[in-house]
Every structure is written in structure tokens, then in C-alpha cells.
Amino acid sequence: MIVEVLYALILWSLVFILTIIFTSIISIGTKLSKESPWLGAVMQFGYIVFSLLVAHFLAGGLVIIGKFSFSLENLLEVSVASYLLVLTFYFITLKALKGEEYVPPFAPRNVVELVLLTFIMAPIGEEILFRGLLEGYLLAKNVNFYVSVILPAILFSLVHWVPFRAAPVKHRFLILFFALIAGLVTGYYRAVTGSITIAIIAHAIFNMPGIGRVIKHTS
Image 1 (spheres, helix red, strand yellow):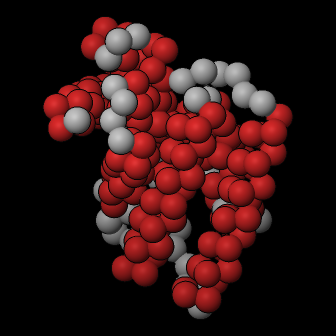
Image 2: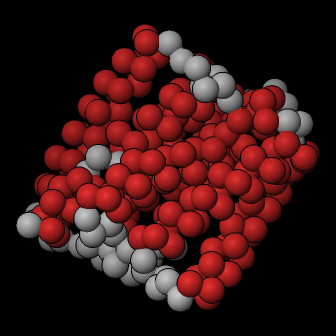
């Protein structure tokens, strides 16, 4: 199992490094600011392309990413579960932060950026990398179910530290904690349903709190 886990981490790291290089090249070539939401979309595009390439050539084929089909029952279950968790976290956040606000400089500034990055590119890109390539490879190699779900969730949470490293401590802790919970939920449903689409939908639901921030920013 250790060998499979290490190889999976190498595959994940390869995609991550290639995406950073690709995003940096685009940033320099287009002079996009590092804080531009559009550069975030470029990064997610990199996750998608490089994850699929690595899966095809180094991980046994695109089949490990997961199937695109899903049942209505699975859709309803994951939607309700994700939405209830979003509501729970929303009220926890209100109580914990007590009105203290933080808007990251790279946050979407209008509806177009919100829809493109928060509900399309980020859910697709991050799920294909974390739940598709990484978790999918672990599951395909019959690695322990809990390891296959929890490891990608932990990494998913930790990578959020980089863009939110300048956030106040409370905000940063809540973001990383919420990302961990979201990663566990999307990972669980990816594992039990075999569908990457279900994970993408759940991820999009977990991103719903971003709607309020954009409305407040543009009003």
C-alpha cells in the first residue's frame, strides 16, 4: 500500500508543479496579476489538462478519474447533505467571526467571474485532480478506503493555506477546516458512487457562500 500511496503523491505533485509552471508562463505572457480571478481560472484549466494527461500516460488510463454518469438518488443525497453542511458552516462562521469580514484580493468581482471560477472551473479542476487522479488512483489500486478518501481531503485543505495565508487567523482556520470537510464529503461520494460528476456538483454547492460576497462587493 505504501508504494501505491507514494506513487499517487508523485502523480499529484507532478500535476501541481506543471500547473504552477503553466500558470506562471501565462501570467508573464498576459501580464495578468497574481490576484486576478482569471489567473485562477487558468490554474484550474491546468489542473484539468495535466490531470487527464498524467492519468492517461502514467496512471493506467482516464478510467481512474471516475464516471460522468450518476443516479438521481445519488444527486439528491449529495445535494441535500452538502447544502445542510454549508448552512451549518455558515452559522458557525457568523458566530465565530462576529461580523469580522475578510475578502481575499483574488475573489470574483462580478457574476461572470463568480460563475466561471467558483461554480465551473474550480469544482471541475480541483475535483479532477484531488478526487479524480489522486483518489481515483488509490481506489483503483485497492488502497484502504479511508486512506483513499482522507489523504486527498487533507491535501485539498492544506493547499488552501497558500492563497489564504494573508487572511486573519480565524478566517484561515475556518477556511482550511471547511475545505477539509468539503474534501471528505466529495471524496466519500466519489468513492461510493464512482462518479466524478457527483463530486463536482458537491464541490459547487460548497462554494455557494461566495455568492453573498460578490453581491455585497458589487452592490
